[in-house]
Length: 278
Image 1 (cartoon, helix red, strand yellow):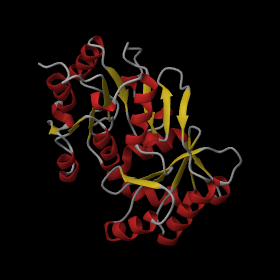
Image 2 (cartoon, helix red, strand yellow):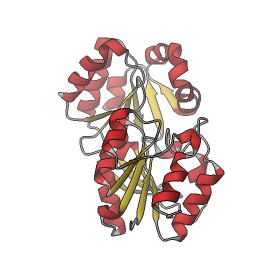
Image 3 (spheres, helix red, strand yellow):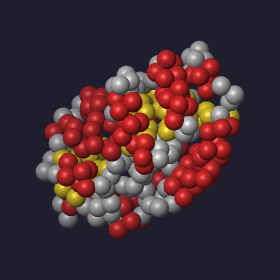
Image 4 (spheres, one colour):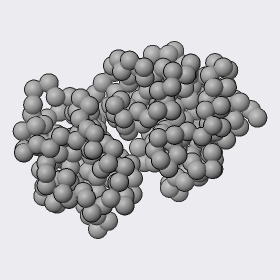
């Protein structure tokens, strides 16, 4: 198998439960893959300011990353923007109004900040069991409380890279998805109760094809590895795809292979088996 590029999801795939670290085995596998000539591209729903320490070590393989579920392609070290697709203000307004109709929290991600109202902040607190890291790390460091999220969405030159619906109650899942399907946007389940919304062209699969164009690599020679609904498009775009053992059944069914869960070094094992041929 001639793999020339590895597209690797972060949360639930390569990162451990602390959302901050790789295992030593994975660090070693990535270094060996790079030494073999494989380009390594972290591919995540995170924004650049939220890239975790293991992908910012100065390692030789650190070059490009796919962010915001395909909304941006940047250089890891400098943050230089190579490609960007942003949500139009009127679409953001429609999502904010939808969230208000159902009375659940909503956040706008733009230019290194997460904008939300005090009402949304208060509504998110009871769901710490599910979104504790988001509350403490993301909103704790980058959250900006505003009075009017619709007005914020229409701020000139505010590039909205992503919209978060942090907690959708189970009884409303189908209704909300149907309403979002009617809007000009892409949406993905990034957690059991969380929907992330992006520009219509923003998928990990589309961005992966753009990265292949930038690097001159045929997507047939790409291996993608992931665990969630927002990884599905890149699993489908890659020549060879691996789902994590902790992925939902429909994600595993869409992949060419299934590895062990993230907390059993599944990502390292997949790299060793399919790239390093160990």
